[in-house]
Image (cartoon, rainbow over all chains, first blue to last red; front, side, top):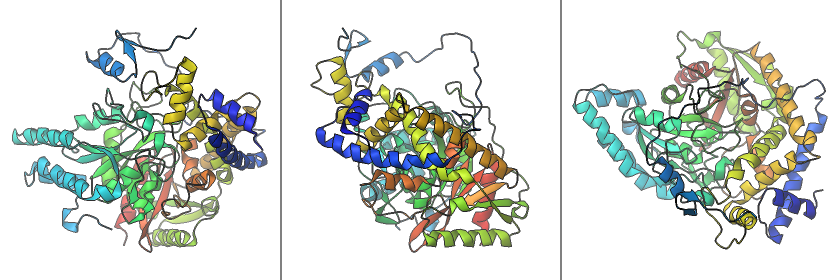
Length: 95
Length: 477
């Protein structure tokens, strides 16, 4: 059974602030889903390779050239940021 | 159901002929649909954002083109709704989340650009479970979408808005996105056609990502022909999506049901399947046999484990993809945060919904030190075994058929108190996402007044076979 401390730890990794009530609620719900995942214990995976993607992908390179964009795109993108200053996205100090 | 009357219903191709013959103008057509949205959407809530100005101006462009004697493409003047997790330039794109309630798309998704270039008319952005996470559109921050056949019931999810809008005649066609059943399930619940294409056949650029190795954009429409025409317009390689590939769609010629080998797997008929749905499936299969198709039993032993593998892999990808919603580059930001870390914690805590939090945390847990091998790596190996199952099956049969869901459209509120009960709705849809196969949900009659779908699965790139089968089935009495 998933402990409260574990839920707190996951929430912190996931960068989500949770109330005490939410922690208790999610503890129960996450535990029931994790219990369902136990069904995979039945599967014999000894001969199977892991698969990350359903199509076989290969790395391809492309020429490193600047593509033309509409002039106002930078402004449109910046306009979506909650805080900007002089054409930059503003963040809290990290030090 | 409050559907369009027979006289109003037409296909893309019929509309195209009418427009070319100047029997009707694109403006008249779009006004008709906008009127129906006004009339019906208060009760259905299929749309998050309606875009009548854009629709009317696009329709005027089409009319100008026709008036000047220029050729118009097949989709010109065709009313199309776009799921609200797909960007349409200049229009709010919320993905059903509060955190994006003020986000205005700075550019078109590739699919939107393609449809725009063809002259399609955008009537609005349709409701979805938040960030495409759910099975009923109940997880939308903008209210639940109701089923046009019974407004006390869900429309299915996550593309519930698109499916309900098509079913109610609020749009002729719509785009949805399917990560684990999000096109096929609402298509089945609302009695319309929905295709989850082969992974990589349609560009994902401009689709707000849920699980990148599973997400795929696809069409919803009233008829298979319309869904096929819409798919043909959106598929193909895009340099903005590295997983997309060259794909020039060609309909299948000279197809006959009598040459079709249909596989039926018991794995798609267990897991709490409602007996009424099983009966509907049997009657469709009998019909196929009478038309000369060979129906044979196949085994897909690992389908049983697909749901668990899916929820491990998809939530793991979710936990990475949704890290971008941090209140810095876009989206809502908590007002009172004092430090950088507080900003992340509070913005996400305040503006993300419960299901999204749950899945981010499940994925974070599955990927965390000490659990990675037991969950993520194991699920990836199950994915390989599942692929082998399907490969073996497609050596014997051309298509696999079964129900898209064990359940009929359920009542609003009936399942959303228990996350696992909601996940089980996806039991039959998630396997194909894991292995990238195309699958189509086709209306297959009713149980009482509620629609039932038939899921048809083909091998990779088998879209033309799916549409050929679907069109032939539609024509069978």
